[in-house]
Length: 392
Ligand SMILES: Cc1ncc(COP(=O)(O)O)c(C=O)c1O
Image (cartoon, rainbow, N blue to C red; front, side):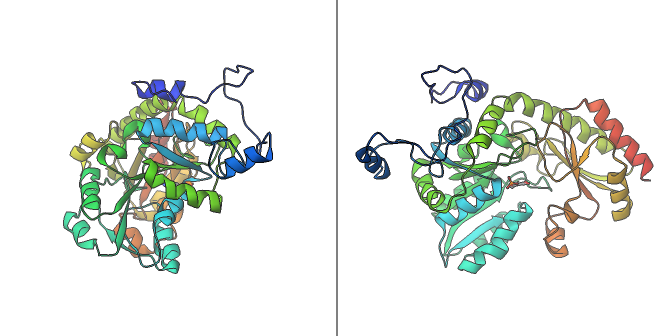
């Protein structure tokens, strides 16, 4: 695909070659397999002597377009589209790990990533050490002779804690380890982990990339030689994205820049309002000066993102009353939608963590996560104001 100078142009203009029909918009290749003109052509394709399409578990024009576009935006060479964000994370990890290996991971992770690391990988003899996001010495001390990979999520779900990608990437390189980054919250519009030397970048495209709460999807992207093993694993195990979902996600990328600008603008307005609102104990937003890692956030993230997390005064019951009194926001665990969404992480997305594990990453029972949508900020604030009053 041709690479233009600017993110927006790449997002809009990169597409696969047109067919003889010269369609303007890319069609959906809803086909499970592709045909060959001869047995010899089929043999050569399966022997990787040609790059003909063969079977949609292996490759399909729609999934190729989606992933090639994402590679342009992330500044990486190659990638694999997956059915969900979790499939991309699992694939990134298992493709490069084997029994006896050790992972160093940031403690603040999405609930299912945490479950993979603590419940799934140990079944195959893969161990881990968690490190607190700001504990520089902790990162260094956690590295063992068997450490093969670092896994981080930045900003984290739901605490909005940041990992210093430059520091962690250098440490990973010095120890011959791969750095895998979950870039779901930031999207490639806000930060490119490859700028810091990240090896594999995972996305839940279900979130801001789709942006309208319609499909599940994901991708893992990185340098060609690192993706090679990921491709082998994906082809054999089949966590493939459907052509239809790939088509939706590829079209969605065209508007990612404008949507992210507005999500971030609205989120900052809400975060600033919450800082002064009665009944709010703490507010976390990367581009608020009060964020403990504000300097890093300004350096590493072009904008502050579309998520705001906050704690309410008055304990758990007040927090639940507050959510129940919200009228316009959707009470839903998804995020990155045009519609503002509110969730209570301790009892939903992170409920599989023990209370100690929740406390260790700042998920209190009073914590609320809001994915700020594209509605008018007056209406967003009015909904919060009313729910704060009603839940007193
Ligand atoms: C940071 C992060 N990574 C990964 C995922 C998983 O994405 P999916 O639901 O597409 O599997 C989520 C889902 O909320 C998430 O918040």
